Length: 237
Image (tube, rainbow, N blue to C red):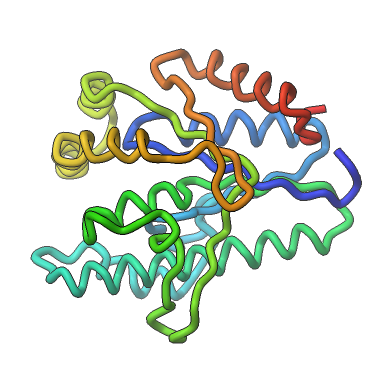
């Protein structure tokens, strides 16, 4: 990897597909080779407690976190909140990316959820929205247009619904969180399958690769490394 070169790699998929494990494995691999990796959220929420590298301390997130789980929200509230978190996370990811580029170190931005999740959420609000329209939005706080951060490569970990349900059932999540995730998987898994069928292989200069998430974590990790080398990815030289 060339000095001061920064790459971005995204991971996406449904609950319990194995995103977090693959991010940790790739991060460890890069760190051992002297390449600094930083984990960021590309979509979703975080608590801002500062208890993990991917959730740095943030008063803003602490103040807003509970509002994202308010029950019986109107469609207008759902749109507002999804645009709010997407705008915030995109801005945070860009700031970290810019910081890595200004440093004298090689670096990699590892994104936990990406523009793929953004499109998935927006399709639940507007079923016919295009990928291009979904990834651009107006920040509700600043009223400014938000441009997406598209990873150089996005890995989507694909796991069959039956296996995902088993993983959730066997997880250590609280009963409430477990039921929430089970309900979401049952409700939205078919929508996610349709989304995968419509995804292009490339989008805005970034490559999209689907990984078989039914394989072991080690085998998936090796596939990701092998695929990167085959594509002459300098982070894996």
